[in-house]
Image (cartoon, rainbow, N blue to C red; front, side, top):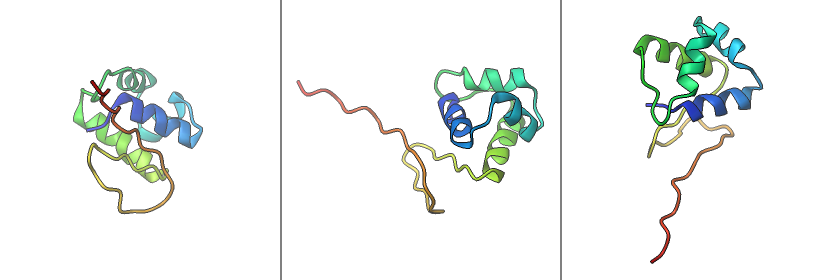
Amino acid sequence: MITGAQIRAARAMLGIDQRMLAEMAGLSVPTIQRMESSQGTVRGVVDSLSKVVEALDRAGIELIGDNAQSMSGGRGVRLKEPSQPSN
């Protein structure tokens, strides 16, 4: 499961716009826009989401799920869970 924020961050790391990601994945720009605007986990057609993940993977981006380890090495960025405030 990936989030819209992860897709936006992946594009930023690659320095590409939504049009370029759409071309890489063989999807339309509005499809990418809908995915990126998702609050939380991206919902929609599994085939379309798979195409985005595969396109990003080919470009060198590994999307890491919650509590998953990244074993492939390389540089990256990970969003931590916000810490709970002390009472």
